[in-house]
Length: 180
Image (tube, rainbow, N blue to C red; front, side, top):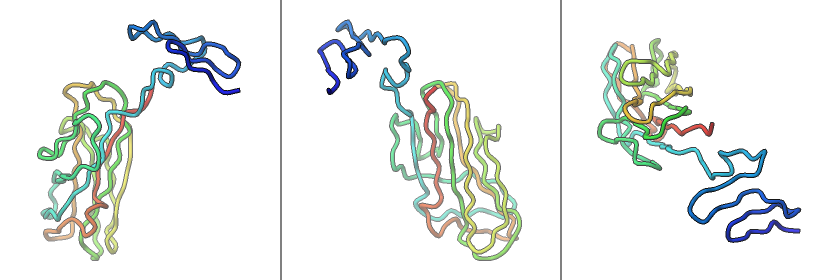
């Protein structure tokens, strides 16, 4: 037997009420229901963006990465000119990033950072560049839903200026709200 949907009630296969509505927007859950699932919440705000072209990074300088092309941005919370994510919903966010230089040279001192509010490191990953090494990382950040923001930074110690790339889609930044 299939579940039954009435105008103001959702029932399970046995005819038991799962969710009811008073018609004015108030939803009542039967006992034992997960409120996040029943209320239809999802992992938003969320965004995913990448760098669309090369960016020169000077030796020994931590530099904000110009992640300027959105793939998606559910709440318009990512700023492609400031390269910053400022979610408008309080909560915990899963944050992830990927970064590389257009260099096959071996050198120590390849670094990726995600900072909250310009100073607090959420992510810090270091590696050795060996033939176009891509570094990736992920973490969770608590955001206040108004003024907290996240930005991505890169660093290299090759001895000279390097350009990011060559696969710009591999230089990306994203986040989504975790359902709590």
